[in-house]
Length: 439
Image (cartoon, rainbow, N blue to C red; front, side, top):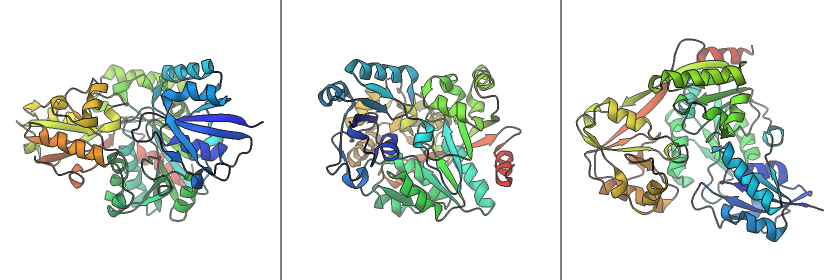
C-alpha cells in the first residue's frame, strides 16, 4: 500500500523536499501541499511538468488551516514539515495537530534532501532570517572574484509566480528581473549579485538548476533563505549568528541545525549588540559546536546623502521578511535614521493601505517603520501608495535593493547599504584562503 502524504510548506523547501524524496517514488502518494507565511500561494497547483508522471493533474495547494480536515478526509499516513524560521515550540504544536488527527509527523534529514555537486560548494546560511547572510555572501563573492575563480550563486527558492516558467531561473542583468516577473523579496536577494557583475540561479527544480550552474562555475555559493539548511552538500558551511537575538540559535527550526552543522560561525552586528548578548552567543558556541571556527564582525552602514536625513522627518523602509516573521524591530534604515540624527521618524500605520495595513496590524511591534512587502503587482501598488500618502520629508530605504527602480514616489529617497567588517582574526579571507588551498 502506498503511504499517503501531505507536505506542509511555504512555496520553497516543500517543493524541494517533494522533488528529492517523493517525485517518481511509487511507495508514496502525495495528496496535497499546505501553505502559510507567503501570500498568493493557496489555490495554486504544483504542476504535472514538475510533479512527474505519478501526478498527471498536479498536486493541489491548500491553506495550512485545512490540515486536520485533509488528514481525516484522505486518511493521511504522514505529514512532512517543510518550511523554516519558526520556533521549536511552533513545530511541536504542528506535530501535535498532525498526531491528534491520526498521522505521523516527519522532519526529513540532510541525507534525503541535500544534493551532491561535482563542483565545490560554499553554503552561507543563518540561525535566523535577517542575521546578515547577504553581507557575508557579497564579501565571499568579492574574494573569489578577485582570485579569478569562476563563481556562481544559487539562491534558496522564492517561486511566487508561474511555477512552470520558474523551474530554472538565471539572473545576469536587471532585465532578467522583468523577464521573470520578480517580487520585491526576490529582487532584494538577486540584485546585489547583479550589481557585482555576477550570476545567480534560483527556481523550483534544484537538480536541474545545479546542472546549469555547474556549466559556468568552479565554485558554487549556496545563498540560503531564512534560516533554512542547504539544498546542496557543502564543502564549507558558513552560518551567521545574530547577537541581537542571542539564544535564538537554540530556539528556532532549522536554525539550530545550521548552528550545529557549521564549519564557520560568524557573530555579526557586534557594533550594535550589547556585550552580554555577544557573550551568550559565544557560550552557546562553546557548548554546542566548539569545533567551529568563529569570526566576529561588525555590520557597517553606508548612506548616500546624510543631508537628506539630518534634521528631517523620515519614513524608514526595512527588509520585509527580517522585520515581519524575522521578528526584528528595526534594520539598517533605522540605524541610519538615528545615527544621522533624523528629526522625527514617522509612524506609517495611519497611512498604510490594503495588505500593508494588515501586515502592520499583524506585526504589532512595527510602530515606526514600513516593511518592504511586494509579493505581486497589487502589493507593489499598495506599497507605492502608502509611501506617497505618508507625511514626511525623506524616505530612508534600508532594503538590499533600490526601490526607486520599482516605485514612483513623491519624496526624496536615500538608500542605506551595509556590509560586514571583521574584527581581528580569523576573518573570511583566512577561512577562504585555507579552503581554496584544500587545507
